[in-house]
Image (cartoon, rainbow, N blue to C red; front, side, top):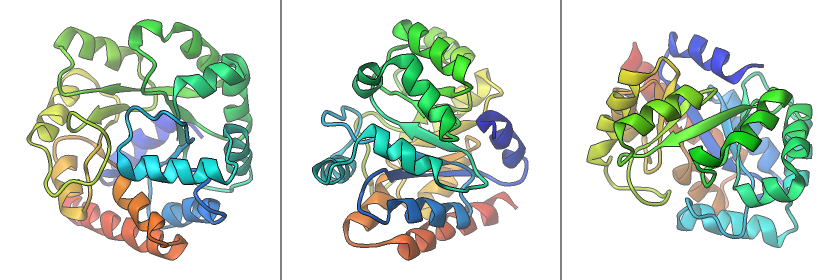
Length: 258
């Protein structure tokens, strides 16, 4: 399944919804991925825990730490993903250290063999992308790049030209985490990206509830929702609660897009 092609097709139907699930967070995490797919996700982002997650806030840091403490590794997560039977694309999010440790070509090939369609590596700068970009492209894995509110226009164009799958618009400055209100810059970020690219544009970071998701999707093609879902899992919620939350987001986005 091709990530970009799938999202291009789905954005013509409704605003896009991509939930984030921390890989390795308890034995039920693969069932959580299946549940959010069944609830209406257009793609699913799966985090591969790392001990120094510079982009992640307290919620996802705690989830990653719990997963690491029970022995989760990048290899075990990728292997589990390979056993899932889903009808939506999978995207992994991790940091460059585990990718470098595994070897760029080997890691990209392992993702492709597991049926993973895309990868997000937020600490890999655009200027240092070449090695990974080539390895990922050779394996058929689409590399999703991020753009922040402070990204200047010339660099924004460069990011959009090299991103594959979609462009990840960071809705606010700072780390991931739930917020009580949508950042004022979120809508501007969506508009800036839509003005320079035809790639699917998804906004993430700080989008925490259906109302915020609808507002953010109004200036983009859709949203990524992570910490709000992971927080429910940390409190003991399992596949059923994950399904209910994502279904609520899906219903709100569908109603707004109709």
